[in-house]
Amino acid sequence: MSPPPRVRITHIGGPTILIEVGGWRLLTDPTFDPPGRRYNFGWGTSSWKTTGPAIAPAALGPIDAVLLTHDHHGDNLDDLGRAMLSDVRTVLTTAAGAGRLGGTTSGLAPWETTTLNGAGRPTIDITATPCRHGPPLSRPIVGDVIGFALRWDGQHHGQLWISGDTVLYPGLRTVADRMRIGTAVLHLGGVRFPVTGPIRYTMTGRRAVELCQAIRPHTVIPVHYEGWRHFRQPRAAIERDFANAATDIRRSIQWLETGVSTEIPT
Image 1: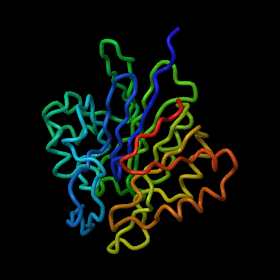
Image 2: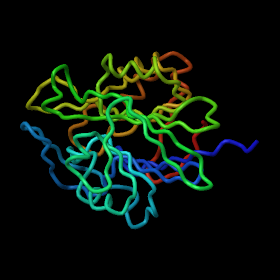
Image 3: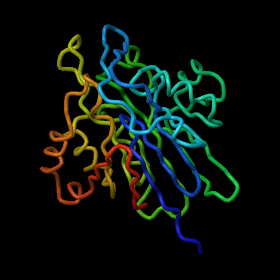
């Protein structure tokens, strides 16, 4: 019996990570624009990008698939990220996003599954998971978002899950009921905008701890909490929230430095 494939994750910046497993190279939410520009997110909201990527697209190498949680916000898909999509055979995103992007993009509804197959490589089942990128009834304003759960043979602790930009709500909690999560890549930062006051559009560290109490992942990787002005909870605050969690959750957190590849237990 062959050993399970090793998983290596490289945090490029923001929500963008490179996942390498069994010969596959998967990229999440491509954001490669340089810093210093303001992006409009709609309905009077906008933000400045303050940090650029650790790796340029030209230095990234070939990509087998892009997992795009949503296409309509510049902090998850920017101009340089959008330009690279035409060079990737498989691009998975929301159904609405696939309609906007066209080309080889495929849309998934929450809990819909597709499969990556390749000669000499493990089969990977990719399931879209639910997200809500804001308060109740905000979907017509903020648009559709999905997360992604990846399953392949040999996973000891459970699936690798990318949460996507979301708040903690009952739909997100269903992940704990339907899946066993080994590694949870959580989009945090507690996003807020001046025009909408105290309303949050992504999870804080405290909400992430609450989620982890339900899903009990072996490894928690926070991403997408810095590099833009609309984030309201930096790493130090997230660390404080996890410091107050139960021992197993506190020990599960793993910080990825940008541009550095890290092997993750599966």
